Length: 346
Image (cartoon, rainbow, N blue to C red; front, side, top):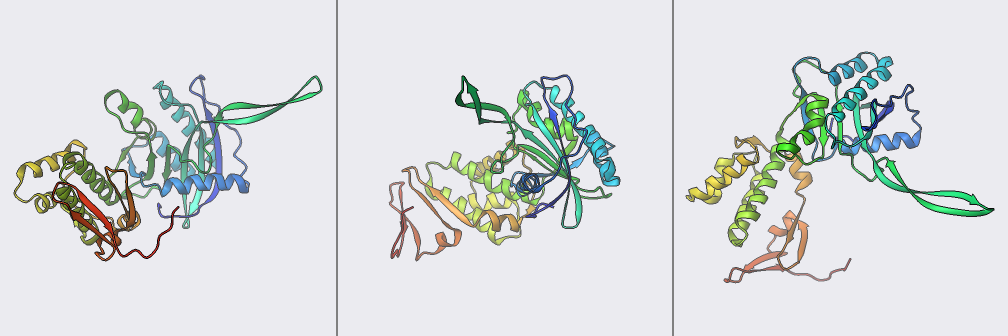
């Protein structure tokens, strides 16, 4: 469902959700889909489905509004318009419950990919843009630049909130793919951040092997930057152990990883494990998502405190004929790029 490069949009409709109004503006006609509109919708769908931040999710028990409306569409495509209006009304009610949730247009699509039908729900948050305005004043021409407050996200922009629902089958691992790029806050901000998943979709976000693999790498790097800033050699050891584990192992056991890296230093072991607990990440073992590793760990970037940046393939860093780290004995190191015959400036 995620790994696609094209879709066929079969039906689409757009509704206006202005939170300053008392009711949403619901369309009574489906969107006409010409080549440009198809490209617009297809690119946003594909881009969101391959986004590294999207998550699998499962609808809560019982028939919720969005789940029921999607089930209606899957069972009878002729009821697409009616069901999309139900989805839009439900989204509008969820938005009105919090003053900080922005107005938007809501697009509902029925699309096919890999010989299966899916439903896309796209919240198109408004982007400020500018247009020109032409007017005649006393037989003279005035051309002005005017702000446009309700521009839609362009092809080069990413959507903040969207969901992709698949046909329901009893016992399936997940029901939908959810993308919500709003940072998850705490306390007062939590309600804003989770309104899309909790109040609108009524679903539970799942954590699969891809999420666990990504979180392990990101949290290990975050911990290393914070706690080993002044210990280059140990920081490098932690990073190398992490890279080796992700590339060469089938699974990660965080407790065993900490033992391998920190040995008998129980304080460091405990500190590292607590870091994962504080971030809400379970420390049980998990299978490594090799597809994610191959895709996201092709290149490695080193940034120094002196303002230098080195970007290369992971294998190049391990090739002692190309790259070497020399310890100077005073807490600093030299990063040596070796055997260069020529170079280009960009």
